[in-house]
Amino acid sequence: MPHVVDCEIKAHQEVAPGHYRMALHCPGIAKEALPGQFCMIEVRPGYHPFLRRPMSIERIFRDGVSILYKVEGEGTRLLSGYRTGQSLNVQGPLGKPFPLPGEGKRPILVGGGIGVAPLPGLAERLMREAGRTPDIVLAARTDSLLLCGKDFAQMRCRVVLATDDGSAGMKGFASDALRTLNPGPDTVVYCCGPMPMMRAVHDVCAELDAPCFASLEALMACGDGVCMGCVVEANVEIEAERMVRVCSDGPVFDSRIINWSA
Ligand SMILES: Cc1cc2nc3c(=O)[nH]c(=O)nc-3n(C[C@H](O)[C@H](O)[C@H](O)COP(=O)(O)OP(=O)(O)OC[C@H]3O[C@@H](n4cnc5c(N)ncnc54)[C@H](O)[C@@H]3O)c2cc1C
Ligand code: FES
Image (cartoon, rainbow, N blue to C red; front, top):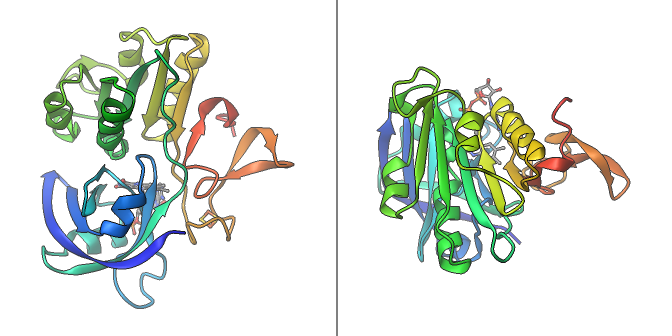
């Protein structure tokens, strides 16, 4: 059962233009959360904005979690105005986490832009519970929007960078950078980012027979499996349904079950 709690903001800072990291004090959520899960955050008490905003859990600590977010519209703009010491009402943890790789599989994490948010916590869990230090692909439009590079370097992960404009790492897309890490049947790829990026990552993995798990985004209302506002089309019927709910069936899916052409 997810918690709904007021959480004190322990730290809040801009980490790149328009991108923020916020640490929240929420021991109950932290105790149950796993990487890949998310929270629904009430960005302002009352009825406007009416809906909570979904945010991936970035890292999990003993007494709380962090989130990493990009200012997109009104909700995230309001969020960016909060200061350390203030409180936010948070519901979580929600959704299904990233699964651990099978015995002997090499994990590769692929993050595009702000999609990198759930991956530092996943890297920590892979090292702690699977004994594997993952390889990382970080991709963004330009150098200043490559996030978490230092965090992965501190974890001693091999990091391959890709930017659209060539200002850091190779000039190209996440899927091009992924190929340089030789994904195949002995690897497991975990990705999060814009849909076109994840589709291209899925295509590379399907071609090279590499299992791939993608963390999807969708507009969400309830975040809890009730409203059907977040459905995406699957390739297969799951419990007699073709549509899957990103919030409760996901957000993490085996990329082969998603209809990427829909
Ligand atoms: C499971 C999940 C985890 C997420 N994790 C993160 C995260 O860790 N960091 C982060 O920065 N963002 C994350 N998002 C996206 C984030 O929820 C949206 O950017 C945010 O809700 C936008 O709210 P807003 O009020 O600022 O913008 P709005 O005014 O609501 O929208 C501004 C623009 O963003 C688009 N948008 C709104 N909501 C979403 C959404 N859910 N997915 C994609 N586009 C959206 C709108 O279509 C519009 O174009 C996540 C979304 C989901 C579903
Ligand atoms: S957001 Fe309501 S069912 Fe997913």
